[in-house]
Image (cartoon, rainbow over all chains, first blue to last red; front, side, top):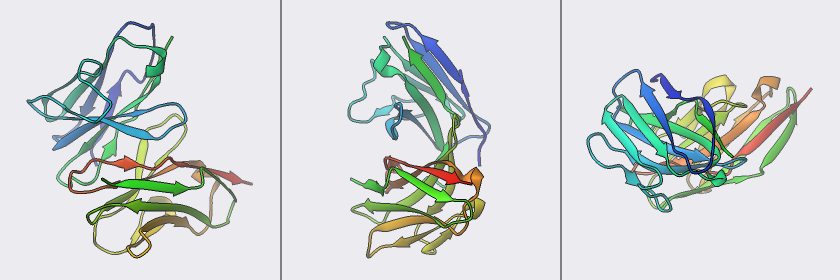
Length: 114
Length: 112
């Protein structure tokens, strides 16, 4: 499976600010996704990061709050904009390669908003 | 749309005892089914997956799961629990759009 890294691994931010999370894969992948895991809860899909076009957002998530870029087949960023304490979560990227049905996850970014 | 129900948010087992984690799914098409494990302060690691081949699937760390279409279930088992199995386990389902829907998760504690 691909090796996936995320930066930063954790951060503490002030409300009203924005944070950009990076996801880097060591090989070209077909699909990249971003998930949110709120404290003590399961994972929820935020969006599918599409290479060279706008991301596809799930219900309840909007581009103004979570802008996503995917400039190539190995890299994506997720920005959490105008943060509030409710945005405190773990944000994980995942990738799928030639076996599109199987996703592998990065280590996550642990975000605390004060 | 697909969904997953994990029965039991917490499971406590003795070291050496059977681990059984229950997962039921709903899907309008033949599903892809997965079990992931999350150790404290880590990301998710794929334990095993069902993708329409053999109904009994073997994964890493001695885990296996059986796909039962008639029961819409994909329960995870391990014959003998080890202390290192203490973690949170997530069942997930996807269909032709490859988007994963996760269950609420089951936390496993292992008693010495």
